[in-house]
Image 1 (spheres, rainbow over the protein chains, first blue to last red):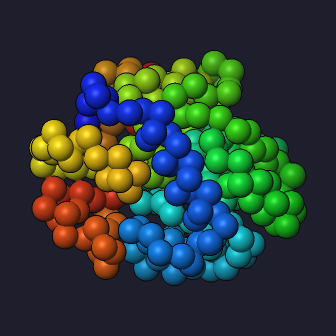
Image 2: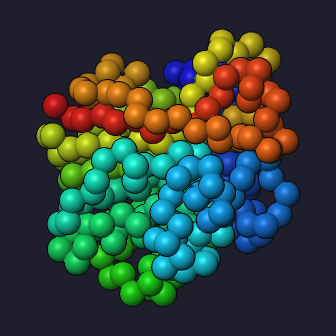
Image 3: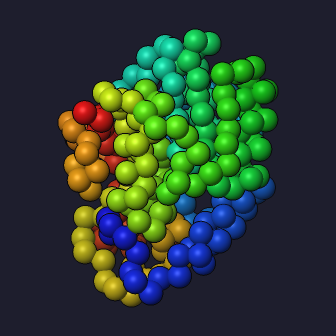
Length: 204
Length: 43
């Protein structure tokens, strides 16, 4: 994974393209995309618990576009404050809220308004009042220092233009001893300069 | 990068063939792109 953008990659264009693609996923999750979506993909490819997904509002699972499964990394204890960076329509966020329980909190962060609104609506539909969703960016999280017991993220930080800034933000908001359950994609082979400058591939 | 950010106990726990069956499967295989679960702790 590249640490930062190539110097001449248009980072504003990258952010706009990411917003545009994920707004389209929110409005038309069954549309044409070059990545999988939905609960069947989550269960079959990423080993999510199919029964747990079936208990969530379909709105939250249909637009799921994660790439791995943070819930298999380590358990989320009851009473935890959990932050989901790039919560999308809220599938991972709602699973985290259920694990944290009524004494805990689950705070979702997303930079796409339509996704954030879907996550809020899904939390209401699921009767989860320990969920809060904030508009924000992984490179500048709208959270206090040392405020989270657990941070999860699924397929989001690879989209940021500077991973060292994004990881620094995760570190800042975690309490000492806090855990980062990080799901993302990695690249085993060195990418050519032309590939690294391709916004279409960054947004995949 | 996680270690540089100050995290400890960093470990890849699981991998996933995330792009199997998508239009990007060929390029994902060419560059070894996979989904991963990673654990890290703030010391």
